[in-house]
Image 1 (cartoon, helix red, strand yellow):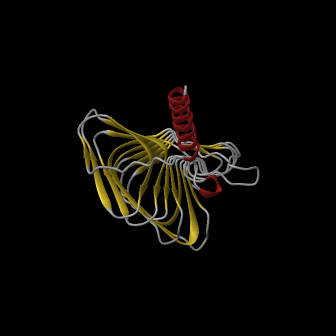
Image 2 (image 1 turned 180 degrees about the vertical axis):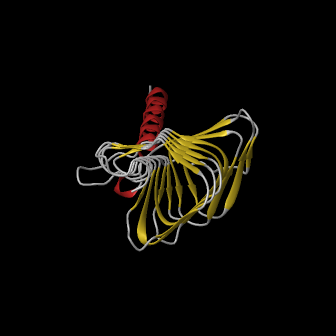
Image 3 (image 1 turned 60 degrees about the horizontal axis):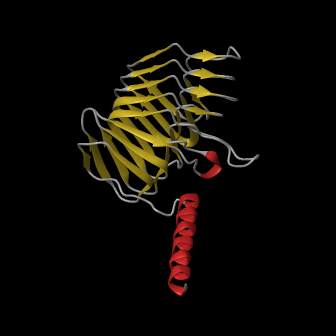
Length: 239
């Protein structure tokens, strides 16, 4: 009887541990430098610079969010990175929450949703939220699409935003401005020389792009920017 009681107690403690881990995301996984087969990870944190290459036809899925605390994360395709989000602070970054730099050279990041974590919190950047004026987001290839947030459907970026290729498409700002990209912060810089930004929808201003601070530097010398919709009729493509 004692042995049976001890066995049952161990099972109960293990069950409790699993429940606590699931609730807190305590089991965090690490990104590898390359993936040649499908993989599923949980609650990934990147704290130093690294490059991740995902092979053709391969999908890497991260549950409970990707948090970049420092350094630069470089993602290279042609495979797909899927991040099932866990919103960062202030509900930011349904897929990727970055206090460091992000470089995207290929692959697909899609379907992120930034949702409020409390009634007063914001929900910024459905796919990517760049947290600091010193951040740098660089995109030269790949696809970022289908993000939803109160503002900045696909991307909310402080700091520096550089785009020379790739596609940012079909983001939705569900309550406010910037269907695809919202650029914010006194030190923000935007340099777009190539790629495609299209199909963004905002309830308020800026279907595709909103530049929030009048002191920001914005240079657009290439790229296709099209198909943006502002439901308030202010800046369908750029506001």
